[in-house]
Length: 274
Image (cartoon, rainbow, N blue to C red; front, side):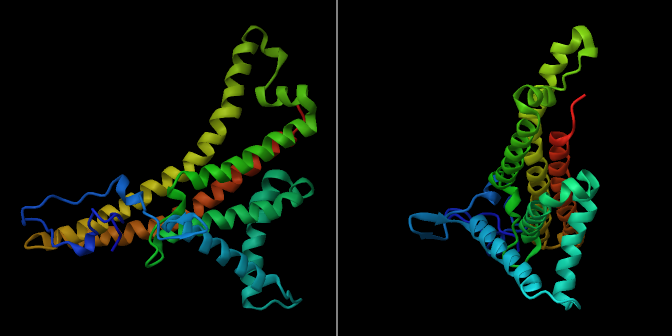
């Protein structure tokens, strides 16, 4: 079952005998479903469940690509074929499409790393025992969005200089005439503040909402498992399966969108200002 909480003063859904018609209320999931106490401490650093999953996911990604390409062969084995398919999907399907082959090649390793990190962090949501998407904790999408933002801004000013870079991020166009100051102000706040915020929140909000829905239907299946409520419990269980399948699709889409937006920002930084 999905866990509703991890603190000692709260009860896990599968440990309670609370059902409908038993005189107890529905144990609705909420923010406590995303709050975790430390599992252990290493060198004064407390590791909770999302941190541990992020670490294990990172190790799994490094191991996979090391195993796939560490001893690459002209005639690839099964693991190398899977690795090449994933790498080539990001390189050709996202990076080349947004940046072109010449400009995009140098950014392929970074974008491949971001794509698979986001995807695996999302994928934890449907892995037994783990059952929690790391990216539903805002710190993780915000950290990756910050990496993209720093790269985007540094490329903008390095390519165009200070004045040119400022024109680039403010959308300077003298043909706008009297509305130019207003347009530049809006574009400045959009690029400097809104874009990095929405880049992180888009991923976070989708994973947060998806996990919450799965938890709700899972807990509801257990809560309704009493008397005539059993029929409704069956419907809720089916919805849990449907939502889990849908979440698998959304997890991949969100990794794709996150990297696509990152490439779009870089493309904007490299574009010549007119």
